[in-house]
Amino acid sequence: MTGYATVSDDFYVNVNLNTEMDLPQNRETVLYFFEQIQKLYPAMRNFYSRERGEFVLEEDKEGGQYRWTSVEARRVCSGQVNPESVASALQQHRYVLESVPFSLSISPLDCESLNVMFGFDFTYRGNHNQLVAEALGLIPAFEKLANRDGATLICNEPVIQFSLEQDCRVQCRLAIEPRTSAYHVRAGEFPEEQLSVYITARRYGSLDADESYVSAMDRLASLCQEVVDEYVVEHVLQPLQQAIAIK
Image 1 (tube, rainbow, N blue to C red):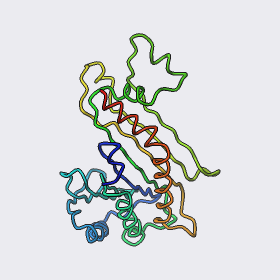
Image 2 (tube, helix red, strand yellow; image 1 turned 120 degrees about the vertical axis):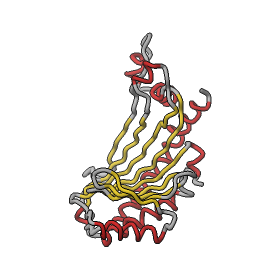
Image 3 (cartoon, one colour; image 1 turned 45 degrees about the vertical axis):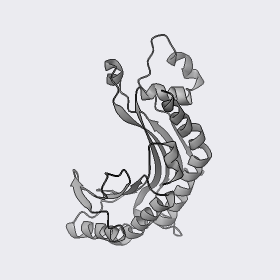
Image 4 (tube, rainbow, N blue to C red; image 1 turned 135 degrees about the vertical axis):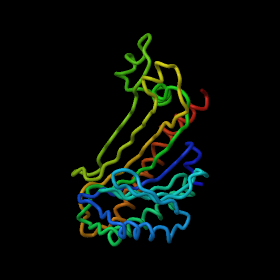
């Protein structure tokens, strides 16, 4: 299991390719795409459709470690939950992205955006918003307001987004998503929910002449892993883990 498993309850690596044009929805094309994926990963045998023309192929979820992929009207997604390694998850995503130009007729021109996301979930029964404030702190300008007598945090969702290029085509986003609502606070009942941390690297626009979907994904995955290793583990994940442990 990847080393990230020690700093969260669940870890996953997802890739989303968003297209400008509608993807093929006919029976033969969709089934052919998933059959190619299943040849490489035979345990992916659960195929079903959701509303609005979304088709999903996934492994059994009982063990908490599984692969999945989906085709929507304008999006192809691939994910792996609790992978053995980041490399294992990326190998799956490379195969999917290698397949889509031929199986689904997705041209390099047809890229609205491509993103890689590293996700981390923590199971916690309590006020997620308050937990995030205690573990990570608040913007100094907000501290006095949040600590006002009788105040209870009901929304605290830190987000930072930055670009690494002048044209802003490649962006990185760190977001923390609590799942405690005002209803939970009012009722004083906190279900055991997932507090999530998302690190997403996204590239906008059609591919350049010397790019492929795989090479673009590799660049984004490298950026994600760099941000996680150099900042997120020490300054976000471990403080959240420690705060939960002492509750």
